[in-house]
Length: 116
View (cartoon, one colour):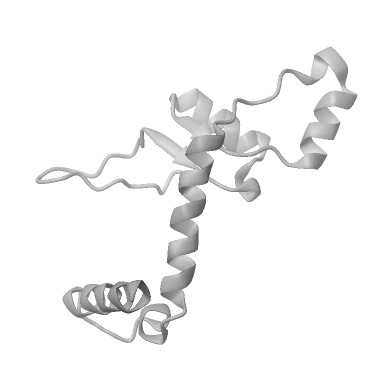
């Protein structure tokens, strides 16, 4: 999590504190949630079933369930699905192009081809 860098538009150093983190269940550990909370970063991470079970089993000592915005998570899912479709194109998935301009052109052509 310390290696996250959000590029700024224009000039300047990249931000190290994003406004919001969208992640899947793999990132729902207590350490990651507490790290984000400590830094004041909003997050939408679903709780795993086993973690929810442990929390419920502990009763009042287990704390309350973490906040979860379904609509925000649905938007993340749409992006994941689009990336999955892009990866079906061999040139995009393997990144044979060395120049960023050519790679971007490959992505755009793939998106156009999928829209047809």
